[in-house]
Image 1: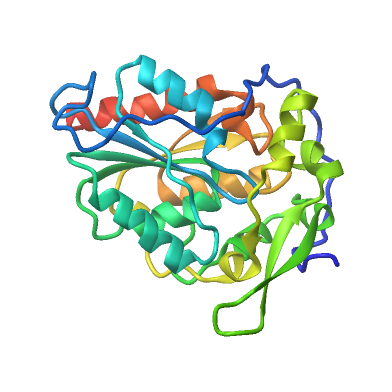
Image 2: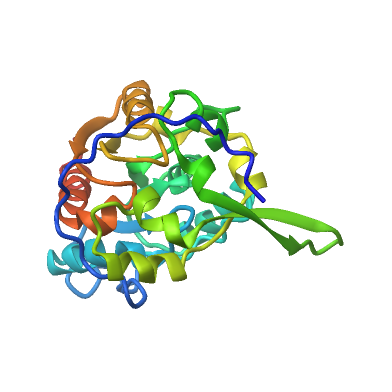
Length: 281
């Protein structure tokens, strides 16, 4: 059964991407509660990485490794992908366990989550959006997907059903495995994309339809990475959201799964945010 996501399509020019890193294993993270971390210095923020739909924490592995080599404390929790309010509440509980300043990073749907989770969380000092949704209060991820033409996600997903605690069934979406690489990870090596497709995390339709109730980007400095070959979120929409948020923006010739295909530029942008937090500017 096809999902109700928009069916509009555009021709997307394929550009050569950088070589991808593997995604096997769980994204590693140093404990966040030590005063200065195993390598961190006083005042150095903890970087918290939030994945989006159709991915898991391992999608940050290349970024985690690079940040840890720079001596930074990192957390990459698993996101439930069940509902925007509940997902944001879960991430807020993770943030509550972290000592000191935080740079909060979100990919895709994870951008909507960090925008809500960071509200009224004073130790979050910077938001970094990686090919991500940046909703205004009252906007949903699906609404933002349709703001500009270009997403081909509707043709690539199918609906699955799962039991609800109180009875009945909920709907969740997954990308068809034979279309996963083209839709989500174009340019990523075939074997890596196959592993990603096998381990992809479905997201509920309700989560994508749920409107945001907070927009932390209005008060917290933000950065944005536009993936110019994105087939999930139209790149024009990414640029528009970044501009609306006043984010410091870079563009990378990469697919939606840019943290896998191009972890270097993603890490560089996060490090810019970290340096800004440390300097207090």
